Image (cartoon, rainbow, N blue to C red; front, side):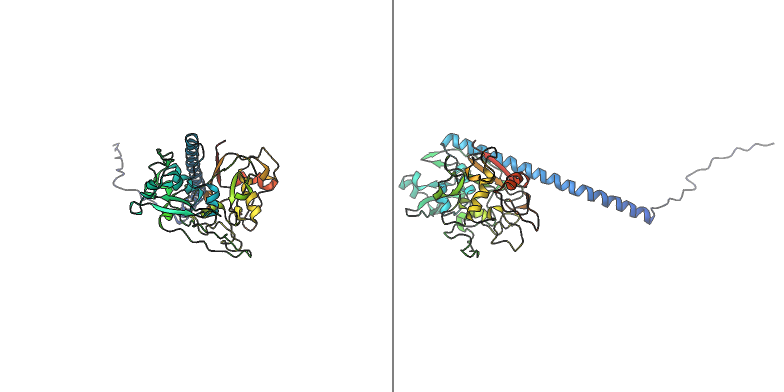
Length: 365
């Protein structure tokens, strides 16, 4: 019998037919991808927000260290214009007021001989700003935004800049308001429009957080007296002007109807009915003062319902409005959409302050 050897098949001679994905398999794959995206996107968003919060806090702490260095060198915390004068005529914000002295760009008439002051010409970029003083001579300064970063000139001495943030962090703030002798609202609560600044004042940069919104800075003017109030109350922190309604040196920011990169409305008068606005505008004048005091008080001292009798957590405070762009929004912290919260000067308000997305940094001890 003849044995025949079977030749192995060449698999390349007879290619196997490849089967494609079925419609069901494709739909299942797409569904899995969509599910994963739905899970990962919120997590990614939270990571990005945490990164922005970390970046913002780092900038605020750098600003705080610069203020402390300034105090150690000069003997006070930075501010080109005295707070009681700025409160009565807030042509720029208290943050901008500090930057003009930390970094340069502004000089006081009172610090210079008349000849040297007059030599700072408009042709060289200098603009004189006159601040109204009740019953007194106007307080004069000259500003030059082009000189910011060259260091301050104080009492005839030139200093190097105490603060050097990144260019992206130091930008003019969109939506800030100019000074006005009128409160934000009249006695009936009707809004009074306050014009936006123009000219060189509009070019003064503010300090922006990672969301593109301005940082608030407020320094104490004395170590005794009510924690917050008007200048005539002789408080530690001047929160309102003597005429009421305004937020003193915070007015250009807290009074804005469309502040910063997010164009957020800060005041109740400018917000549509039912929309969120700042808790700092959530009450009458005394309520504004008490709410602000609750934000800066040391919770270890005094009674929760009596914030004006407490001690501050620092000699100056810096606030970021956080991701919502509203400083302590009525719908943040203990508040919710449709259920706004406006009374921080209460036990519940004090307990809930750390729940806001806003960031607070205190300095000065």
